[in-house]
Image (cartoon, rainbow, N blue to C red; front, top):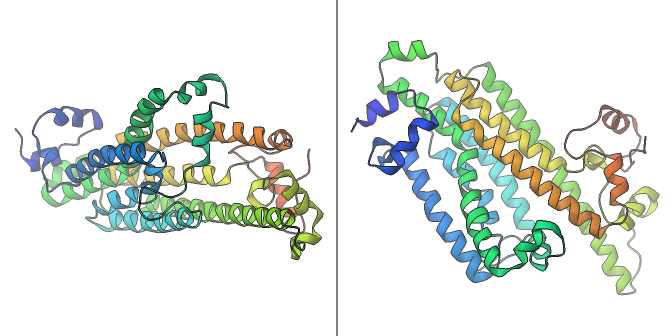
Amino acid sequence: MMSPESFICNNHSFLSLLPTLASPSPFWDASTPYHIAFCTCQFLIILTFVASTTSKNLSQVDKLWSVLPAAYSFMCIIDTRTTLMALLSAIWSTRLTYNFHRRGGYSWPPWEGEEDYRWEYIRRGTLGGPWKLLANKWVMLVFNFGFISLFQNILLLYIASPAFVSWSVGMRWKICDQEEIVRGLSSPNVCFLDFIATTLFLVALVTETVADNQQYTFQAKKYARRVSNNNGGKKVNDDDSKNKDTIRQYSDGFCQSGLFAIVRKPNYAAEQLLWFSYYLFSVAASSQYFNWSGGGFVLLGILFQGSGWLTEKISISKYPKYREYQKRVPLYVPRIINLWSLLSSKGSGSEIKKE
């Protein structure tokens, strides 16, 4: 068996790591973040499956979603780049944890809390098509283990894997033959690509923060109006009451202004950009445009395609005007005319008119 130094100094790919999973190797050496992260991931797969099965709340992984990538990144701190990556992930984690908390996602005991509303639609089998299969409790049990607990926990480790690539590069510079490293062109030094990655990360972070705040404010005011009307109370008196377009949006039931006038899911779009930018750090470290950690943001994008489709299907069933909104506003990628209309419109509540 090769030594930990030999293992680290090899310019290993993901495929070269696979055989180490089945036998003792430096990969499992307790001093490496690979070992700690994989053991953590395995433990959480079992924990979230047991907790979600016994509590009948399928949002157990959601409680960890905002925490784990940052935790994995902090395991990899070894130089300036990995420290920067950890700090950025910590900012992302703090924002997302707060947003999940204010929506009722956390409570005590920890396996309680609000469940993602989409799971109830799936349990009832009201979405039709293959989703009806998940109305069967045994099929849902298998789905819970295979997709929710297993796949999503692995994905949370995978999207943080650029930090592991950067850690490997940093370790190689510390303990390996310098001539071999120079020939490999990898570098632990922060470069211009790191600056680009940081900028994109922060732009995406600000975008999803604004989008989440716009959505949260809209939903809070919408339900406040609904409660007031149902109780026969006084009409809510605020600036929105004077804006006919905003009142119409409350009547339609969903937000169509601000960033939601540019794309229908601005927070989903920003999250995908954010983890692509995180991957760029591993490109800067390894000097390879494509490395094994890139699969993380790719799989995340695929997940968001399915998640976005499911959310859209539910929105269509809840809101009669949603199909018109779909025709007017794209899902993830904005149209130039939408951006121009938003920038040139007067008033923050203006809606982009149908072309």
